[in-house]
Image 1 (cartoon, rainbow, N blue to C red):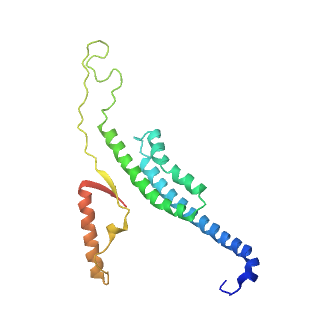
Image 2: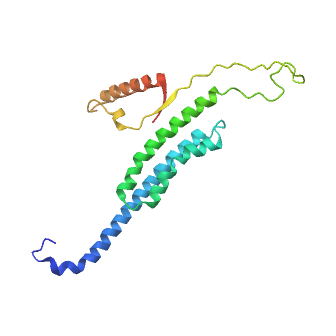
Image 3: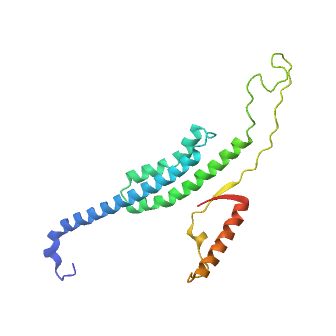
Length: 187
């Protein structure tokens, strides 16, 4: 279209437009597929962590339900930028899901044990029986820190030798060990 008089080429615009539209749709489909794969990986990871019997079905649905918005957004999206933005949304929701799981685990741990009727009393057949409720001190639960930013793994210098790699790994191990004293780690 750099011609001085491009008017003779105008008739080719509809064909060009169709090619461009097809390319955009192809790119959109590829991006949607990547987001769906990422979403599947995260939800399978969470389902594995939520498979513990102590979590209620309602809690499982609540934790996994956070991702339904992303799923619907991707299905309905007609814009590549919107689909691309869902990667960061998935990471944020993953962090939030693990925060909720930590809180639920702590709640379950602090819940007093259930005592079936007739047990825990000195004399279950008579009124006035004294209820014996065991006092179990709550076990402190570490929270989980999700490390999902590349900046955490950034090296202070260019890695050019095996010694540089060893030094980097030692520093990284130290950072992780410091966190591990207070929190569990998920990468």
